[in-house]
Image (cartoon, rainbow, N blue to C red; front, top):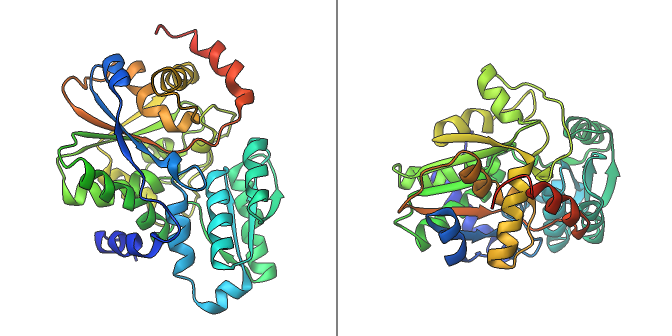
Length: 326
């Protein structure tokens, strides 16, 4: 059954002991630079550094005792794996996380540090997912998807509730779009309550699986490549049950962004806010600059989705950002 607004409220109650209620802060410097009222929803304040803890916690909290005892398994581009490992540890549930070789080492190490068993499998999210599903059949583990699950969507939807409570007059919410759990969840909450809100999803240029699937009218596989917004990579699953249908219903606009603009937005966040965040966290700013979005006099919330980025990427970010005028 597809999730509802009621499920989002249930999720908020269930996750409050593990996942944080994150701050929404105004950025004077970014507002000046982007000619809008820019507010930042800081999911970087989560114990795992990213929004994924919400959905993972809610999904695990709903498992019956028998499934908890067997253990859980997932595939991830990094942040969901870390979130699942953290939440599973809090709840005493054994966890295994399958990652592709495209996942940065800092994210692999972070998942291991949470106590989960880690398998690095293949060069794509789809290959990592296949390994996880094989383990479900072979070992009897319970599979917790990274995005395409009602409880995951409802958990991410709690972000939408918090935004509306802290900024009831918001005009625009901008968030990264990959598998659709984040945009779908936020939209399920925010646009059900306030349908006038403009919800913008932003994808990377290469490997935008949801974007290509919506165009095709069905879930499709796309080649994956490295990106500064690595957590926006990966497929949506050819047997997608929920997010492929939900995202087009709640998302009002969609843009793709190039790597240079992602890099420029990362630098802007550092210069204006002294925050070193991952590329996926600033694609809203990247889209505003690349596509010259008219946000004049609008109250815009950027979902700063995570900060799990290695400082080793700083040189590459600096070089790429110089291709875009400040």
